[in-house]
Length: 541
Ligand code: NA7
Image (tube, rainbow, N blue to C red; front, side):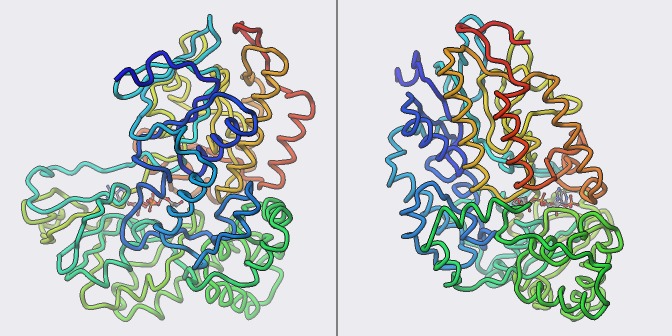
């Protein structure tokens, strides 16, 4: 098919998840530009298109995990649950796309594999997996923070006679009832799936490498008081949410864990446990859980005590107890620890006894123990933050490859731009605020649209952040992150889950309210630290 060959766009949006959908809407309808979006998936949804594993649900409250740009929809949409299951999130995203007639501008099943800046034209040339090429003046990448899957490779994989699934590539026709199943990984994905699968499979083996602190989620019907708040004034509701540090539906605690008695601390943790939500347990109990080792220990002692109370078998309880800081992406899943009391669930500590190889009948551990299963499921996570950008072979100014720029120590400006890559924007790229996503995507997309408009209004050919400004932003981010315990704890947040990846800070940890203020200062100062190049592009200094 002729298809995309020769197409000339104002804006190419890569991705049709929460980020890409709104970016398309914004530039196509509000800026009235010639824009199209591209997605590897067969429909909208991004993360929510791919992640269909049993038990998959959003663990951020629905009232913050939605768009705010369409106030009518915000008032009319009736979430059924406080934390909706994946099909409900996906139907919401389809409803948004349909209402705003976005699908006609989205090329589904179309993976962008290459992006090259053409200096003479001041345009990007994009190539699809099918080998078609087209051009766009601007590129907006809404490719996802957590979507480049990471699957370990074990010897003997080809020998396995059973079925293998990856949580983020779940087939609709998978039926595990009555089967013997091994789940590898106990992060957000693994914990949700483990609880759900334990209800239907014959035998479930949980292959845990590093235990994590898992608090209850607190599932239930969508709270009526939040519905009332939204209906009354959607914009005010949105602004209130954004004016927090982490945008998880609450103003973070301001009291130190040291400033209350031991009894009061216990009561605060117990209330948070009963109410559910991982981010609330971490950030809305005390102000210093993520920065102060003693405060952090108070939280971890509480969770360890819960584990020993809930789990019947003391040996299993011991294995489920983490010993590192409570400073990873906090997990929240109802009935997680209770699940290990079920007769059909077995915890296997694969840190103590590593997975040696795969056999025809299952997994063999280093001790020689064989776990016989019909199904192996990988819930082993993602090459987060930078991974999906690097899957696109991207070359910027002067032949600079993104893979080279990011080889040793990735840097970026405000999570939005990369020096050397003019007219290219990211949504929630590296050095974005550490927050929940949809409302922050909107805020970032609005900024991107403003920058595109400014570039066009000035008659400029290109818009690019200087290396100096980028370095300053990263340095400031690093200073704040170094004060947190996230920097001392291995997880995808600092890249330590992927072998060979730079272990470093990747986030702006000073919170959304401060982020908006910092970005606004830069913008109001005439895009300080950015260069507008002539049309067609010239070298920006
Ligand atoms: P995570 O949180 O990165 O969790 C991955 C899990 O897989 C974690 O328990 C890992 O153990 C485990 N893992 C990874 N590789 C292996 C190998 N080779 N052997 C055994 N176990 C392994 O990914 P999720 O998908 O759960 O969640 C990602 C984010 O999506 C989440 O934070 C939310 O924001 C949404 P490890 O801790 O590395 O020892």
